[in-house]
Image 1 (cartoon, rainbow, N blue to C red):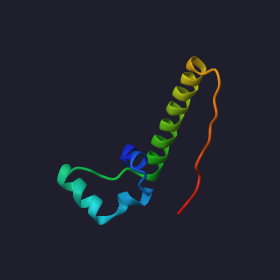
Image 2: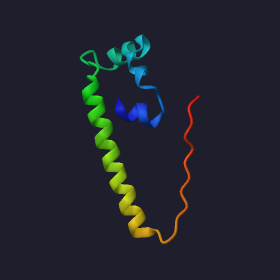
Image 3: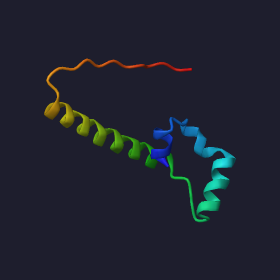
Length: 74
């Protein structure tokens, strides 16, 4: 679920929607939304793993780099 939220740039609240919950019940009747703490922990672990992978990739394969970001909200 956390992968879906991050990959598709969904708002965290999307999982609380009735449509999402109905869909998940059809896929797996035993599905229960994880608590906020679990989602926060998953996001933190994913960030750390990705950060390390990017750091190693840059260290191994990059001599020069220019990095830009696009940070904005709608």
